[in-house]
Image 1 (cartoon, rainbow, N blue to C red):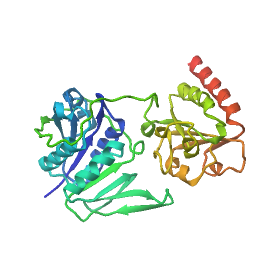
Image 2 (cartoon, rainbow, N blue to C red):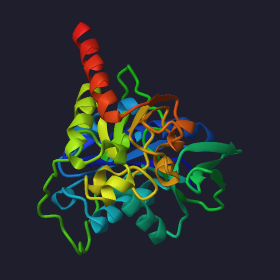
Image 3 (cartoon, one colour):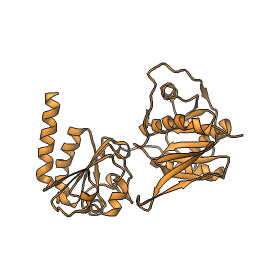
Image 4 (spheres, rainbow, N blue to C red):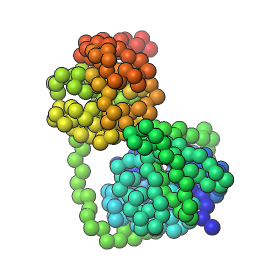
Length: 327
């Protein structure tokens, strides 16, 4: 009988994604309902040292798929690794962070194993020993709760929603190699070119400063970037300015961009269209800066400032720098 939770741990360039640690921590919490053990699966090349950092997040076992064929992400190779991990552990549920990699990988493996898959889960409910997955629908206007009538189910968890629970004690758990053939890889990554984009991954950032048409032109992005640098924040954008070519799509927050859940979201010159709100309305604190007092964004903001963001943001940046200097 299938039981327990298998968590896919995503790593990029030798660093484990924080969202994967959130998924692992939540798996430990939900295992009390689901029953069984929590197993972490990490895939890559020379990832043994990374695997050694996982026990403090409470897995009962860590599986490592290590090899040259897994150095760069390949759907074919990683799907084989995850499918073999499922075969080895026989879990009831498979968790992963809701990242671009997982969106490609998890659905593919779920289809291969004829199992249901729910993406962007933001909460769980329980019914006996069964987990029910809750996720927003219709741009956050409603929520759907999914019940699984199958021996295996896959879920991706929204980043920045679930807390990371790290043990302060030395936790020992077995770390085992899982031998997996990469299989017939139809496409390989031969080289990666990093763009001069966000210094901080947008979907995992705890603070985001986003700009809209109220910044008046692409030449004014440095004003917002200075605030990002002062706060340690990621730079976001509305669809309007992305469509206008003011900034690359990787910065877009919204229904057709990235869904984010930071602790603090500062919206600069953003009117608050429903498409944008769908991507950021789960932010813990929302600060809106807009010169239109009737802008829709103010209805959803925790704090609002009526004024030109190009006047307000530099003053805000200056005050934050003063605070840092005094501390």
